[in-house]
Length: 337
Image (cartoon, rainbow, N blue to C red):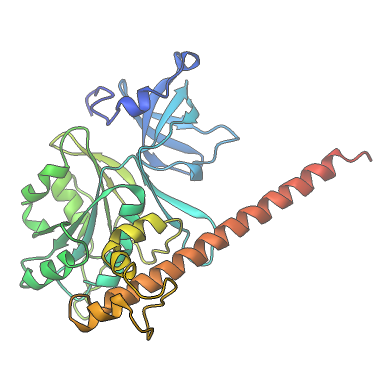
């Protein structure tokens, strides 16, 4: 890769404004991939490998982050323009960072049995919570009539862009408006929906791709880590592994954006504490009966709101317990023998 300017890498005034006189000798670098105790980064002088100091874990950084490097060592991480994160898979109470400083999320699904409105809504909430523009990309449009899939996706969020294409053909021109110089897009979606094929077509690379099982339209995810890749139009692409489980936390704002229509309706309910079930004067139920609102959206709103509250409370409780343990250990170390 030829040397690029910081602006070419996505640097903006938001990051330069954070540089102080004490940082004059430090070098800005954008993280391209993460490893156990080191990171690969891009600088105006070319690619570099950086190590992390003892007080900074790789888990606290994300692909797309801007850092300041002191020689071969990461000195500090700059405040982010945006951050995508989820609750760690399983029963973990830690947040897992997905990508940072992203402008657009390509939510990738396919025109087959993988298409799932409830799953798409999770990605959209994640994007809205981070202040990122979501675009639904429907792959494998050559294998089925894409029209009903496009209509279903557009019904999830008013005004949202939905693009149907055949990534294998290499014709991804419809996505060019989000891939221009200075822009960063992230690919998110389930395994086997054509994400790696799409990444190949967008970047002109040769990422590994896997076949899809015909019986259930499920595929093998072939991206095993997150990478920052250059795009021909001058933008940047963060490819991510297929997501099998997307647990949401700290995304209340994103839920409010996605379900703003239901929130507006709820304001007209007779009772302030209306549960939108059997209460008299419920504006939400009235809209459902009139056919103006899909009952499935109400179910999704309830489920995602409940999950967000539960997960956020669990993570706060876990942090409180961890802080208590640290305090006890510190106190024990200070006691005289």
